[in-house]
Image 1 (cartoon, rainbow, N blue to C red):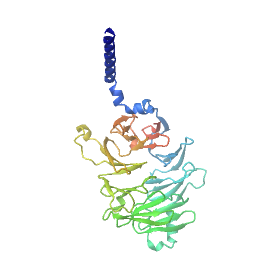
Image 2 (image 1 turned 180 degrees about the vertical axis):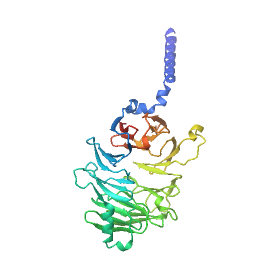
Image 3 (image 1 turned 135 degrees about the vertical axis):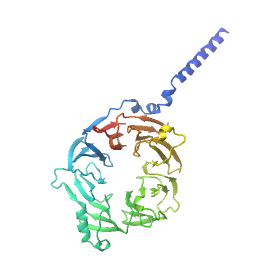
Image 4 (image 1 turned 135 degrees about the horizontal axis):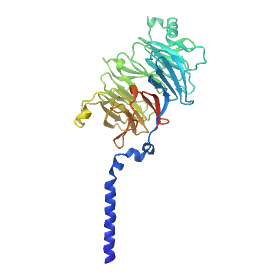
Length: 402
């Protein structure tokens, strides 16, 4: 009998200890899931000051994140990740309205295309070359006046220019009334489309744009012709304000996300989809990462579920859309900028209301500030291949490894 009583007392003690343990550690298990699931987040971050320069006001990176170009006073500098060397590549107090990198392997590319006050230039990054820049605008206008399409437009002006996705030294140029392919070395023009259009977008070796009547057009670079039109039209809208987002690779053929002039986001399963799904309203921007579409709404009204303190700050609504299932997930964040990235398929990287870098765990709905120093001019870029995060502060350009 004594043995039975002792056994019952022993079991009771074990249960009591278990309950005390569970009640003592709930915060570690619930509030810090990032720490549990990703050991890198348990460590203190050690920012590396890559470029120390208090005058830097902006930097951009090429798509492969191998090259970083920054602007400081009248100096344009280049940082290469491979060598981690810094050099001056250009001098101008003007900041480019647009900067485009070649589509080939950016480790070897030695030029960029920039728009300086509506003068499009090719800037060479290799300082050993005799010529440091060439005017694409001057060369194009000269060739246009000598071409067989000169009668299609009296005074053409370059509204948009971009590298061809796979033809070297070829540029796609949009004017007021044409889209043309310009071979810079051969001084040759080929007409792609005649008539006013929206800005064009390039993806999957295709060219996408809207005609004046609001219809979407798909032009194939491989077949060198228009291969499809949309049955749905954005008629009587400002086509210059419409944005098209194209996934790099997907299992749904060539679906599109289109944000119209009114901020409505549509999902086109195919470009000729006659009834695209409306997946968001009041949308200002979007980005696609793998099989998820992120729609950003920076114009939402204060939510009753949000605190009064938060409702006075920058409320952003982010809609996560799954093209495969058609399901959406909505979350609210207090952000100082709509600029954000997805890290490791799970964490949103963004600037909180104090302009400090933060992570939001999509699985556990938990936010974590990772850098204590404010980001200058909302300028930060994520390199998903190496999990490097580059950001600008008052000291210069920094990098951390996530």
